[in-house]
Amino acid sequence: MKVEDFDMFSVMLKQRSGLVLTKDKAYLLESRLMPVARKWNLKDLEELAGVIRTRKDEAVIKDVTEAMTTNESSFFRDQKPFDQFKAVVLPHLLQARAAKKHIRIWSAACSSGQEPYSLLMLMAEEGVKLAGWRIEIIATDISSEMVAKAKAGIYTQFEVQRGLPITHLVKYFKQVGDKWQINEDLRSKIQFREFNLLTDMAPLGQFDVIFCRNVLIYFDQPTKGKVLDNMAKLLPPDGVLYLGGAETVLGVTEKFKPMEGQRGLYVLTGAPARVAV
Amino acid sequence: MKSCLVVDDSRVVRKVARKILEELGFACTEAEDGRQAMDACAAHMPDAVLLDWNMPVMTGIEFLRRLRKMTGGQGPKVIFCTTENDLAHIQEALSAGANEYIMKPFDSEIIQTKFQQVGLL
Image (cartoon, rainbow over all chains, first blue to last red; front, side, top):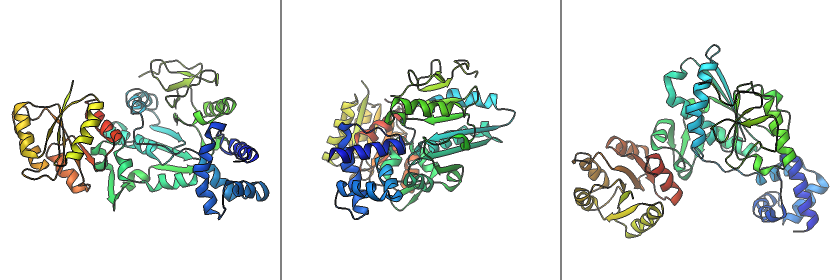
């Protein structure tokens, strides 16, 4: 690939999605963008770059951005964050929000939906404790393809075996041909929408918990800081932010600090380091 | 070291599963059908059983029902590992006392998460 083409893709991706594409990831362009080139009847990435440069076709640019963002997920991914949600975060909210009985959760970068559905199943298992509560889960992703997949809630046999206990499969899914679809009543409880984390977050409203796991790793430092600072504005003083195992707020933003004893969980600076349970 | 009995009439499947389980730290023994598995459990009750469904002599589900009636037979975590991938089979397995269920084809990640879910890893 020509240097100027690589640079063009990398600048464009940075602007559009915050994705930082280093030279050692050039192979990713080849493997992920060839299908996009074929879709638009273009011979290779050079032609694809040419089209973007000259025509600035939004539809093509959107396809490129979506193809380059990583969509990896599994049910109850890493397990620990969900254990913490059940043991620490949810008990606190049940107490602190007892008056209004309303919890709002944002799954930012939800990919194909496993994270919000896992949360929903977890809460369904809690059953009576949440009777009469209004639980709102907003799940967003930059990719319209992923949002559509998440909304449909249809997964392959491989996908439903990664992290999902068999009892949950039986309870919350129905078999559709050789695939598995999450039950309608669960699907209707999540609001899925397309959303770019680099844009204005205020319209999303306030959240009690934000899941933003394994997204920041693709951003450079200033972008990470900007996204986290904006997320801080959406949380109440006892709000909780989840980051992925390889991510941290240290040296990135002053707005968050690690929650004491809870790896991967962050609270607003100035808030007590422990939440009352 | 935790022990796992691998029950499958296919030598290849036993070999693949055994390799994955040994890498996860299990001491493995093998059986070719439900009857052999019964004998193995009577001699020594394992911590886990990875169990195929369709086998000659005695099927996996029949073995499971008999195992759960044996002295100490409530102990082992039983994980089905079968090409039967419909809801009816899964429900039958669970009501017969299976702890987890793997639909073939499987890979090491699936085996690992399933053994985590039953609390053996």
